[in-house]
Image (tube, rainbow, N blue to C red; front, top):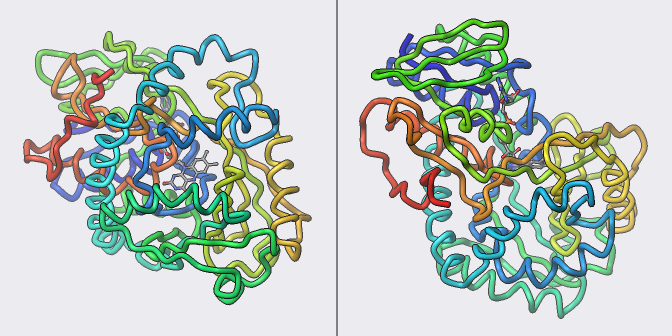
Length: 410
Ligand SMILES: Cc1cc2nc3c(=O)[nH]c(=O)nc-3n(C[C@H](O)[C@H](O)[C@H](O)COP(=O)(O)OP(=O)(O)OC[C@H]3O[C@@H](n4cnc5c(N)ncnc54)[C@H](O)[C@@H]3O)c2cc1C
């Protein structure tokens, strides 16, 4: 067997398909089948314009106010506060201006690559019909909030991102139904979306199987490096031999990396949403309520309201009061929104402290490639990450400098 990919989320399956496209024989192993994790319930955005890291002076200004509201955009459950402290320390260090400039440059490179790779990848996998190019409208409550956003837009402009600021009349034209409390907006046309993130990953899985890929159920307990290749140990005692292994188990990847002797400070930013029936609102584009940490997205299968960051680890039970709190706000922000009949969801964003993913070889062996930690941007960066992984698997030079994404940079 040439390649074993651990994890059938959007990152693992995209990498598996690109590897398959290079003529490799690929098996994907997931403990729960395709689209079982964060890739199923996300907001469906290809947020290519979102190049600024979450770790930034801006978030440090907003965080104290946000933390005061237990159901607000950012929360740290007391039961997890001590455990998350080392990650928060690294996050804080990543907020230094020099670090932010470096991660913005790196993020821009990965975004540009991901955008360039996306449409050829969708065409090759028969999923091009699932892409929509409606853009994103970021809205602000008042002059002060808008003004505070301007340095961020200036930074995006320096990186070639196209956007347009709008007043209330133009906003009402492009997206009717917004509450008048939103006085300013910024439209980014280069923000795309997928019909439905779960259906997309399932379509990738179908395509992978149709092209001869093997997708199997199995809980990976450990990976062992060998002199050449690697061994993947499954619950139940089975060992799978592989020429190469790709570790893309989302927010659980650090647990598997640990079995290779690596300590990677991956944490999860838990996010919540509610998916309403498709006719709940006439949404023309994704709308981002940045001051409240959530978005509303149009999928072919519904209207999804959600976001928020809960630094609560992998084991605490979900607190769906967060989904309800965002839905309640969304009703105030879009008075015509019908909030009945929703389905709630929580997902684990796999997040590293500097808001960049880990992409590159394991320390234990160059035959083991890490591809995880995409935080808020796993769907967005899936095609670019897959391209890099396919290059690393086949010995080709990746098109961007991978040092900012080195899994061992912390
Ligand atoms: C509320 C919310 C909204 C979001 N919105 C967006 C968005 O609009 N755009 C965007 O780009 N990103 C968004 N994200 C982030 C995005 O969903 C993630 O970055 C992305 O899904 C990560 O993909 P992945 O393949 O790495 O992980 P996952 O999708 O979590 O897949 C990992 C897979 O590994 C499997 N696995 C784990 N451990 C093991 C094991 N030991 N053995 C076998 N299998 C294992 C799991 O079953 C799972 O299927 C959002 C996230 C949330 C929570």
